[in-house]
Image (cartoon, rainbow over all chains, first blue to last red; front, side, top):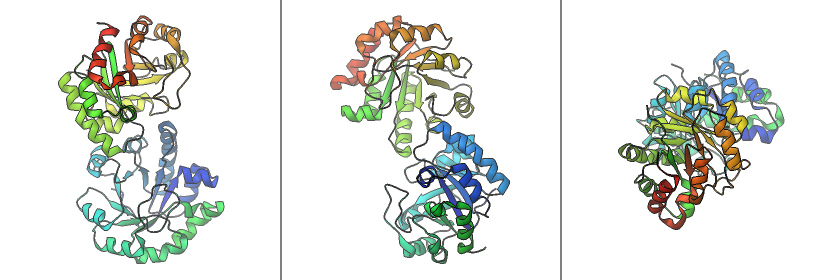
Length: 211
Length: 211
């Protein structure tokens, strides 16, 4: 079974890539040059055929790099692309349903946005919990209230699940995010700044720190 | 294996129900009092959990009525709700992929919008083709060009698949739609007019005519 590793959980978000003028597949390939906790494909607008095509292009790249490949929201696409797993939010398919479709060996994550949600997820069949937004974020239009580093610390103390901190995290924030108990840090826009994802991902991995 | 019957293919569209001020589940129950070709659940905006909940409420109602229950677009939800099948569009998962996830016995439909698309679908593993819009429609924001009754006639002559005519069809149009070669007629907004779906569905079934 694939396990989530500590480190940077890189999200290839199609809208964020479009805004930054970057090709998603090349961006993913650049991310995969660094040792990642996981790589997630996220798209709120794309049609299913384009998304499946892209997911199928990324899956072998991730496999070759030894990085778990996770599809956001869509269990059917995760399966068809032979991804390693999927990530669901509080309004998406419940983890038990997602697990039933994905099978026991898939990597499954659930977004949480408060200590109460983290505690409610204690018996969910998930491998990790997303937790955030840690800081104010620009890549989500309807974001939940910011939890902050203190909220992250409380949530990490409240659960046995590894926490993937997410939301508005910049490269400078990574040491503090890790110190607050994050097992991994999810980065979206911060990896695209400056238009050089290769350089940014290496910087991020370095700043989060090793094992 | 469930087969699509001739007659009215009733679509419960969450947006159309909201516009008409009608509860989707009650509307579906009203539709199911008439002998239908199929009942489809369609929602472009709803979150996955609400949609799964509704699909799971409709599936046993359809089963009890002996009417095939089809979920639009989403193969994962169709499976989790134990629906009889799914319907995909030209930008959704390709029929082969949908079939792989649904299994050989599921009812699977594909939307087509031109004779060329109908012809291209000849070897697709589908049970029927949606075809339209036959007339101008208000329930789709980005509609394809109107095919008209003449287009329907040509398409019906060009394929071995049963055609479900769709798009702006009113109750008065049903005899002409059937005469043009439609195996079934999909109705959305026309079934909600006047706020009495029970009365409208019986009228529609009667106007389309028996076997």
